Length: 182
Image (tube, rainbow, N blue to C red):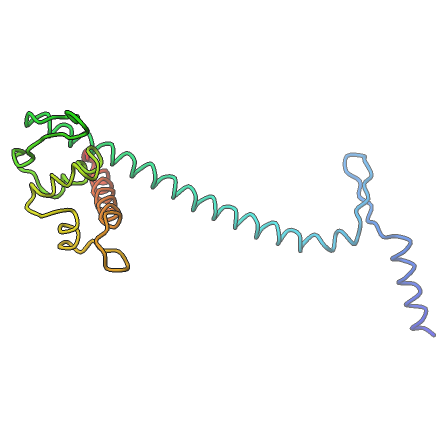
């Protein structure tokens, strides 16, 4: 019988007083006990969502930073290629029908580190002439000799471009850390 009285009393308390009364600055507020019990679970859920959102935002910010770094490097390298053309009295723009008509072997000190700038400035076809001036038969020959191949073993300009961008970004960061200009 006493067990039944306890159950009756608990049921009455839950049905009669499902709220906690709080007074803040003279204002009375009622907070549901049921919602109060759910609060920790909601807080944990919101915390997990917030952490995930910060991770996604951080990942996206890194991608955007990388995009701008590679774009800036491509512009800088293109300007250097243009400068090399001008210094060696070569055409800085295509002369006719999209052909540049340059003899890149005239460029003193031309090496493979200049190739990325010429690729960005002149495009694939004209930069192949630079590859030839460096002593290779073609882009495919250069890429395969240097090991820039895709997952199928085929020579890949995209793979070479990724390596060059990574190399140039690392050089730029090292120069920045050492307080030098890139």
